Length: 254
Length: 254
Image 1 (cartoon, chains in turn orange, red):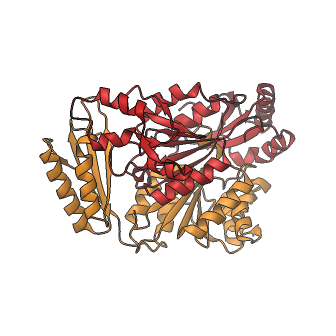
Image 2 (image 1 turned 180 degrees about the vertical axis):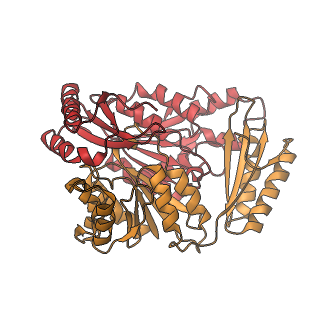
Image 3 (image 1 turned 45 degrees about the vertical axis):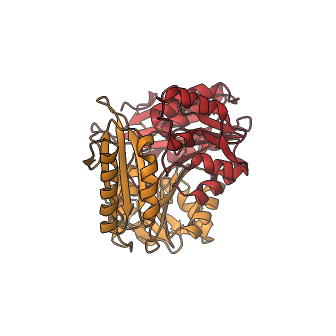
């Protein structure tokens, strides 16, 4: 888990489509990876429905517990897009016409097409700082420590990259892996526990894998100190050899 | 959102590997789909780390709020597999040798290979009812309204199918879609809001899509009453024609 020097992040995936199984989430992994690189480790994800009471309560709970909260989804023009209004309610501020967002959307649409539904996308919590949307114009925003992003992966990713320079991270979380085929987790477990016990600054994970060509175990060491991570992987590599396995540095091939 | 007659479900994905971005989650969509089919709609998902305090607190929070809680991950033999111990702690019961689980694993391993690390997989909260694991033997379990499943998708799915006959669901949630290419969400939004407002028993979702061949919008209607779902899709189809689009029943092609 993250070092004390690292700010923490929570992600709220807002939308019924993930909870119903209609849509395979494609945002968690991207944000998990990029936030780790920025030294703002993702510590919790919640997938919640388009229900105002749930969104408002969850935003207020997690913005108090984590340094940064990211939300995806619910900022389009339709009736089920209620994220901006809910974030405003969570902060107790009005949701009102945002002049810069309004101007961007007004320029983007043909005359007469910037209709009341689309005007909702320029109706934001008072005090919101815009997050640029280079794909489809309608912006996200930051309010306090809550960063509101689109749900469509391509748009969310573009928004995040623009936002990322404004996020102050801690030391990047370094990750190294070693794997061995044909070895069972249960044969490494005792030795791994001993290695983990000696290295409290390292997070050691054990992940069995299954491939058509056979299975094995991958061990991942993570932490903010690259030398400590390398040392842990060295110890795991030696342990694998001790039980007769043939360790290979890195993740197993896909 | 679910009808009042439907029991509710929450999923806890336990494991650092999803939060670090190492692993793309492959369990949420399966469980969301299957639970919807069983009439036990998935109402929230949380992805949480291998941290005992977090797991215990989260289990206790969500088992009080939802009718069923499913967990995936953390029931293997290694030091980072702490789900069973944490569920025991959440319920305030001891974690102890489970005779039937012990017997199954003892039969499964060769003499001398059922070592202390593997014995942890037969050390379960007192009162646990086993969930069979036809793939790799080590069972999951149900304690109260908490169902503890493996994290490896193939094993999790086999466990869930065995468990599902023990789950009493409500009416299945019926879902129908209609889509139209070349139309923007913002042109349908006002009409959709009116359709939704007239049909409180229906959950109407609007999902833009992007394909190499062009984009469009899919509208999904969900609810426990098939006739009401059909009627809502009929109204959306008429709306699409009104704005000059060519509606096609079903989801857009992938």
